[in-house]
Image 1 (cartoon, rainbow, N blue to C red):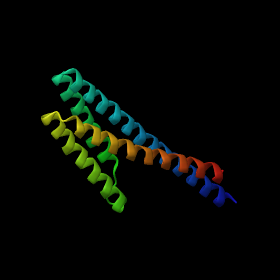
Image 2 (tube, helix red, strand yellow; image 1 turned 90 degrees about the vertical axis):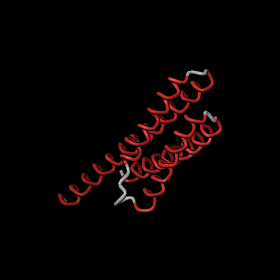
Image 3 (cartoon, one colour; image 1 turned 135 degrees about the vertical axis):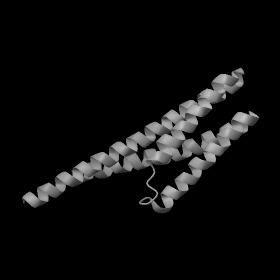
Image 4 (cartoon, rainbow, N blue to C red; image 1 turned 180 degrees about the vertical axis):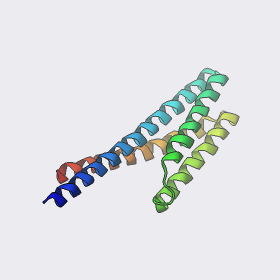
Length: 134
C-alpha cells in the first residue's frame, strides 16, 4: 500500500509541475501579446523609440521565454514546429520594425493568439484530467 501511495504522490507532484509550466507558458504568451499591442499602438502614435522598445521586449519574450522553454530533445515534432513559429515571429517583428507595415503585426498577433488559445485549451484539459484522477 505504501508503494501505491508513493506512486500517487509522485504522480500528483509531476502533474502540479506540468500545470505550473503550462501556466508559465500561457503567461509568456499573454506578456508577448501585450508587448505586441503596445508596439502596434506606438506605431499608430508615431513613437518610433517606444515602438522599437516594445518590439525588443517582444523579441526577448520569444527568445528567452518561449524558445527557452522548449525541450527540443524531448518535444519532438511539436517542439520543432513551435520553434519554427517563434523564429518566424522574430523575423517578422524585425521586418515590422524596419518597414512599419501594420499588416505584419496583425499577422503575428493572429498567429500568437491562435497558439495561445491552444496552450490554454491544453491547460484546461490537464486540469480536467487532474480533477478526474483525484
